[in-house]
Length: 295
Image (cartoon, rainbow, N blue to C red; front, top):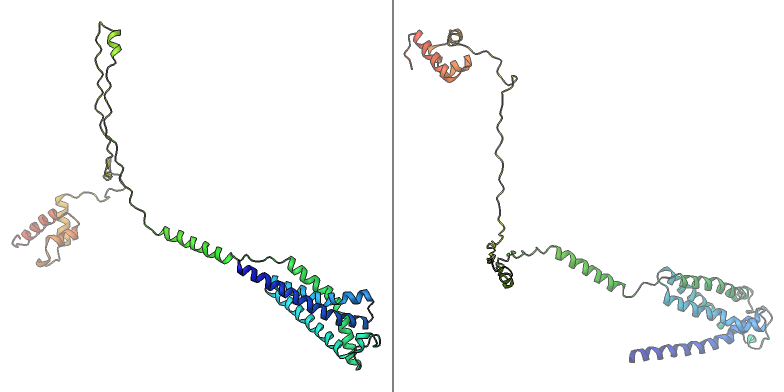
């Protein structure tokens, strides 16, 4: 509460100082306006054109941001400097106070007089241009909310919290136990006995209720299916079946040049392409024919 009162008093004091400064500057700018040919009404309004735009630029600097704020500061500095120059000229030329100076004459030196007249006459035109531009910038300005950083921080914290909860492992659910309470058995109603006296009514006994227990059945894989049926002709061997005599003749031909040490059942089997049993029989026969001992 005290802080608000202090700010209010500070603003009121600033307004009072600005109002008094404007009154002092208003006198000098009015006399300058009369010297450059302004009528009494225009000369009275001339200070509002110069110092009024300064006040407008000051307000714009408090509202705008970025490049627009820099532009408002340039306008404020330019018109402050112009008002200072005109007030300085008013103090150097005493004839401006009583309008004894020649019309359109602000200085004895011609180049300085031309520059001062150009400055004094261009300020109203500049006020129209720069004032309109500043108002347009203020109207089109979209201020950023002050609490935007806090909102962004809260949003990022919420996002981090959501991401962190996703990493938490899920808790194991408690096993569901079935209610195994047996249902009450129905009791025979008494009025049935009175209604049917000849045939006694037996009490209906319900079967005991078995609790439903979920069982885990292991997955059983089906055994591989065996091939059934007749073997196709393509899969059968195209080589005709040989008789023992044919095998012996073929073995004699193949092993005719073999030494005795090479005459083994494995060598005969590979050369004749027969079974191990037939290979052993052929080996014994061939060794007997050569007069060797049977292994």
